[in-house]
Length: 244
Image (cartoon, rainbow, N blue to C red):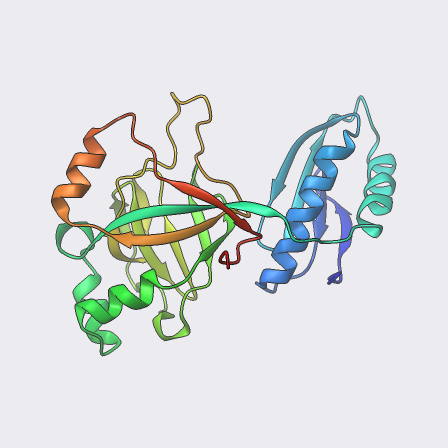
């Protein structure tokens, strides 16, 4: 699938490949493929590549390449782009649901007419695609939430929510990375540190990866959180789809 797109200037040292306003997994796969193609092309002057749900921002040094030259080169590159299946990582992310770890869990369950087990089962069933890392370092926006759990954001956002919060807002679920304000519904928390500036790779996951949530109890949460060397398990799968 090749979405409708345009390549437009973004300030004085940026260019945007824009696919409109629709959140769609095939558009996101195309953006992911475009980002990889730009990286592999090694175009002189590019200083940053930022993929989002449905656009790709490209930063450049105007001393090394003009905007017109860059737009022309990018047009040739993505015009010939073909999206193929690729391997990606599927992370196993443990989550403690409810109580102090997910203070909105009980209200959220009542709102949807679900008991604790049913809500956890619905939330942990999908393989979620990481559509985008953004807003904060390591914050993972996930696509694939069951439509039964789609819920408008809170009327009154909280000024502070814990790092590692697993939450729902609209048709998305997410894993937060640091303490921050949020208007999303907090269902649980993971001991995974998705952002750790002291690590060689500070941001653990990347756009295009997949996540599978796994429920754990509070004792396991504490043990994993206190182990500073612990990292979650992951495996290779085909382009965010479950392995056969």
